[in-house]
Image 1 (cartoon, rainbow, N blue to C red):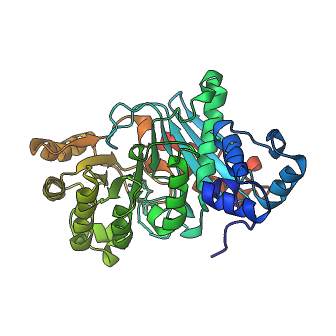
Image 2 (image 1 turned 180 degrees about the vertical axis):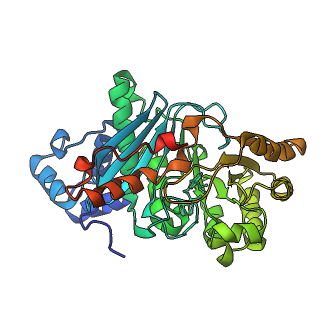
Image 3 (image 1 turned 90 degrees about the horizontal axis):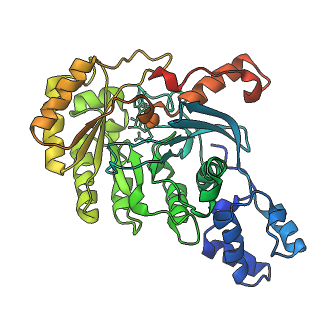
Length: 386
Ligand code: SAH
Ligand code: SF4
């Protein structure tokens, strides 16, 4: 797998790693904090803007670190509610970051106003049969700096929308790690990025407002349970029996439910917080009442919240979402047992579900138009497909 770009991204540095690097250059210790202040509090986009640093030192920084690891390719807005950002990395790989300016139910934050969905990999190796991100496999992991920079891009968009809110750094309410990629497959970079996002010298964003979603890499869930960073956890279950789950999620062969569910319980017990079980409803695959009953039992047992997501059609894949009546019947079985359940209906809210599609469509358009993403024209209504 090709490595991330050679010049390290400054946004991937912690205060300690940066201080150590600067110390090796003979710089005073306070320089690290000065730089981080320019990055996260003042949100500059050029080294020359760091006006309290000596010119020579700024030149050294520019030659040593990458300051702009992602660039806007496309900003697809869905009304006033959703922005889907397509970002290009230094090697021209494409990733998606999504902003939703509306309540997002189902991640334990019922009153949230602004949610950001970030990616952790280019593509995904897990090969879930229904998912656009996994279709072409994994291209590469994102570095910690590339993950953090997605949020910097979001901050810039928000700054432009509401210039007066600029000083309020974390003007968004939730971050969901539900974009492209399996975050626990890129564990170290993801954890490092979220530590930077959380740190007082970084974005200062509360870990309890960050939800990480995984397809179920059991050893990594257990590792995550031991981290001091108290993230929220969501599990992509999508099947309430091994038979059904295995059909659509190859990871279930490696980590079947008998392994996954105890790991989720261990996480809940360590963190004392409700885990969310995500369950995409796919017609004739996992939408039977028997699946609903089994899901009800699992959720009750784990004291978990269930997030039902009507399947979001992906071009080239045969799956469909069930009728509204069938969705409601499925949800009713959970409701009757007082399992906390959310059935997403609103168009703009299931952004995570569509993550990967914009990239897929743009890459397909690029294959037909070799001049690159900018000239590929409209990549198609990724968001309107829901
Ligand atoms: N890899 C992680 C996080 C990214 S996927 C994971 O699988 O949890 C984020 C969520 O979107 C997952 O629950 C995933 O199953 C769901 N998803 C993927 N493709 C979808 C589709 N076409 N329709 C609805 N949900 C989808
Ligand atoms: Fe990867 Fe998640 Fe898509 Fe599965 S659902 S292929 S784990 S991004």
